[in-house]
Length: 378
Image (cartoon, rainbow, N blue to C red; front, side):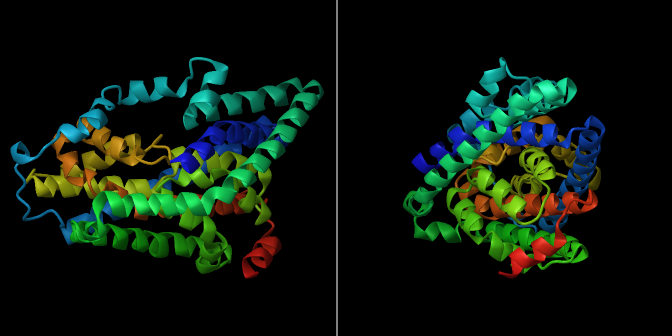
């Protein structure tokens, strides 16, 4: 918890400096707009594919069929706080949530979408004012270097943080918890692997590198997100390592922070799997047309589900509340194993955003492919 809190206090300032500096260095609003448009197109396609894969897998495996859960016999008091958080969900609540109360409150609260908005506006402003903004840009760049230095100091505690997170999971649920609802967990992990090696692997092959080399390159980050169940804890390291891999700093600074809100492939797999599982477990009829409607709802609610621990569960409750045909209280069935399911969704989120950054850099013609292959080969 201490390790995660230490990282989270740095997320807002790091993202602000990285995005604002990256946009300002591009020096061209049209270019920024082009990169942003291509990024959003890629994100929308991949998250839609992830939702379709998740829906397809859960309908084939049918892990909830036969459970015949009577919600009147289930203690739903433990999920009341999560359900209450969905009251302001919906399109209006989502849009209003993007705008911070003040310029600095976005940085203080660490809301990823609010930080992105402030950073993008700052970057555009620096481009607009031209040479007079160079001093401000130099200050932001220096501050960015200082923040990454602080991140390096905090990351020395990563092994301790990982040990504590794993110990908490086993202590809270017991060693036998790994067998709880094994069919759902096993099916979900299988779905994540199918997406990684069936969808992301061909993208890597098309660019010209091995996904296994990429996994080896990010092995430390993968271990950290497995332990903390939060991809947010490695965001600063992801930005630095992707730039070292040959990705354009401007593209990296825009794609990675945006991906933490709009390209959560693992979260999409989780939402699709869990929603249909709960329908199956509670014997709630869900035909093809209703599942297509659920897909449309998920395309909205999955956006803005930042990579912090527990965010996916709140988003699941919001999805059921918005869809209306699956009892919201049924989320109590997966609360106990949500952390175990996060062991699959968070690494998938991380891998998906890393590949997205490389892909967009290649699309923009700003990927140093020789450096990419050289670094991955080490």
